[in-house]
Image 1 (cartoon, rainbow, N blue to C red):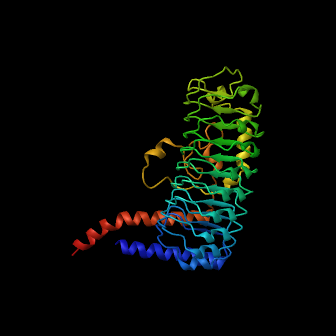
Image 2: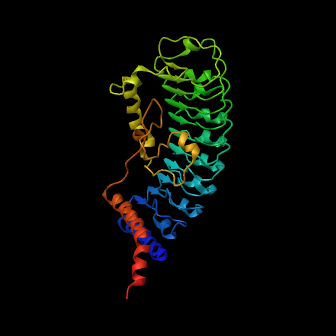
Image 3: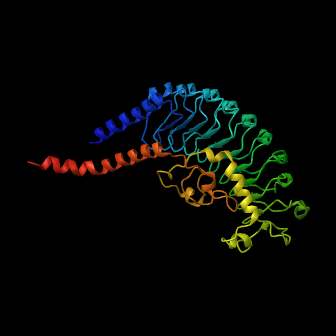
Amino acid sequence: MSAILKFIRENHILAVIEQAIAEKKSRVILNSFEITDIPPLLYTCTHVEYLYLHTNELTEIPVQITQLLNLTTLTLDYNNISVLPPEIGNLKNLINLNISYNPLKELAPEIGELESLEAFWCNRTGLVEIPKEIGKLTKLDTFGARGNELKCIPEEMTRLTKLRWLTLEFNEIESLPPNMDRMDSLVHCNFKHNRIKEFPNSLLKCNNLMYLQLSYNQITNLPPDFIASLLPVLETVDLRYNPISNVTSNDSGQIRYSEDQLRSDNADLGTPSSSRHATQALAMNATALRLPAVPAPRHPDPIIDEMDLDASSIESSEDWENSVDSSDLDVQYQNEDDRAVNEFGQFLQAIGMVLPELSRYASTAS
């Protein structure tokens, strides 16, 4: 019976692609179809701008996909891809790229050739190093590489002067570049659950920084002029669970040293602060909005249970703690046609559950 389902599914996938070709659709929605190999027919959709391939069973991305030169959004998260082709750099119009939850381990230097890229997610890929070529992505606005094995950040990353949303939590980062103040557009910076030993004082010089998350690190001392360095726009510096020895009082409430030091505006959920509204307004304009919502991981992961979910997650947990709900960074990209595609996928799943039982009755019928 599984062969029947496979036949139905494969023909439906081809029908989706054929319809996209016939109607010159800008979006091709092929997520959650258990795809193991991309149909060659897809590579003829040279007009497509949004291609959703997340939550499938892909193990490789054929180089032919780089023929789709009009792509602006490509989602490959939640697959089994171990390497991206170097030709990925040919996608000069790509704005949003999500490769999270794939066993990639490393990024090809050619990733730096994606000159239009604004939102880039590579969470939980086993990444051990960020290539220095990332410094060439001068339009990058949003970057997430949480839950990896990163030990440092390349200095070239400080060239990303338009970067506003940065999350690198749950890594093994021990130190940060000394000139991070070059990244003057930073609004939210998340380094929770790392091994940072020295407070990144240069970040306090970023004029737009509102949220700095440094909890669960190994910071032992604060700079002598720490309090004086805090800019008025800065909402929160989270220093919980650090072995800080020279804690000083701070009447402004910008600094969190312990759990009982919650901000009053967070305690009163019914009346969020004006600054929070301002941050949400920024998020509504962020390029991450163009990324699609995706289901939760197929397999339970004990580390994920402790972590915030991806910005691409359909859950409504706070992806940017104390800043912006993940729902503000998601996009409900489905129109009526897209919903029909996903509903058909759910229909196939339902058939898969019913067919074995029907088969039993059919085999016993006289």
